[in-house]
Length: 178
Image (cartoon, rainbow, N blue to C red; front, side, top):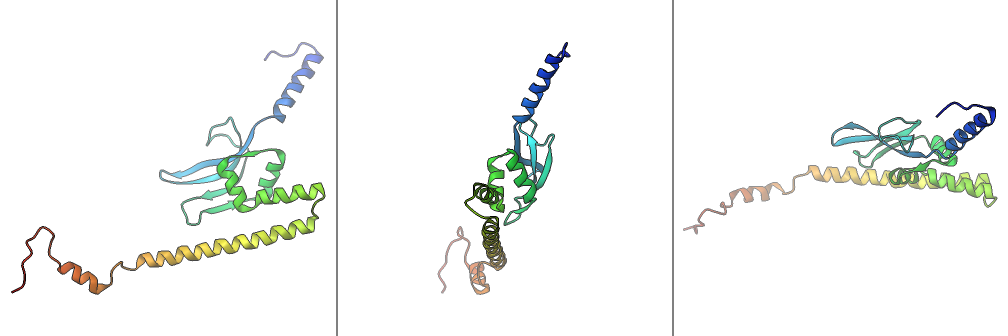
């Protein structure tokens, strides 16, 4: 771009840059880290035109899908502020934000802004939702740990295993006793 010759061209150039920055596509997405076949992700805010692991604006949290249930660390306040600024989450990050309650917070804040809810009522609803969500996560952790304990036990009792080892090989001739 050539430098402007007079003041109105300079003002027009500044206006174009300001309009470009307003519509700049900002996404909340995942940036991959870790080893091959054992990835973990950072939840980041980045320009949608930058590469997946390229330049980013801010790191919002971490996501580790290798654990059961998946481990998610997220700064809810930062995520909510970026959503309010107009950042668009990708499908996976939208699911993560929904799981952590950020989208529910945004929904409640919109209701407060419209005058449908009071701030105290919205905070109470959010706290109730958080408690229910934590209970569900705790139940899943208990189920997973109990299923791991069952997997550690042998599939057959010892007596059955002894009998199965005494059986003839399927390709050997079966002879009757006596």
